[in-house]
Image 1 (spheres, rainbow, N blue to C red):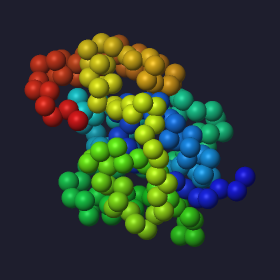
Image 2: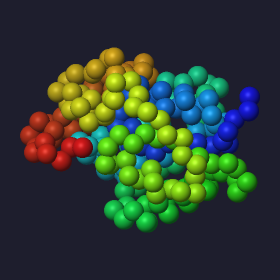
Image 3: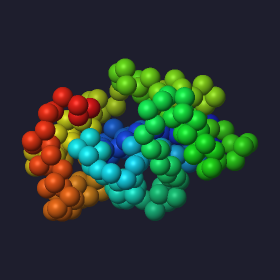
Image 4: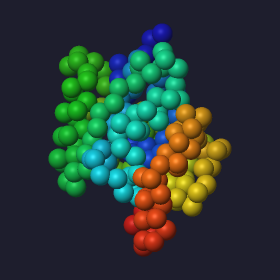
Length: 189
């Protein structure tokens, strides 16, 4: 198959990984040999906005793909850097550790709202812009429902759903749920 790209970079927190994320990766597979998932908020502390560690998100994501497709997915862990220029440099340097200088690298994403401005920070990568996917799923209400004890089965691929059910049985989930239920909800996005 002739791919347009050697690598497509898909940036996200994937907290949790839902069907629109999966659909994006499947579209990326149609246009690229490999996909680099830049896992944002990859620092080691959990909070209600970022309940899953980067390694857990890797497992959650890979559980939704065949062994052959898993071989086409690479991960880079992007810690929060509250400066656009430094963050952009960090993402570019992490991607550069995965790709070869001659590789054709692109960026895949969707401008859903003002928080998507970061997609414009990589003019050196050709943009594969997507329209809104699967009824514009957003992870924020899915996370909020999760803390209320609900797993919206129609919003998640099977591997994510299984991960969420397992995690729900852990003391970590109960701690995060308690924080969610007792804190100010205005800063969850």
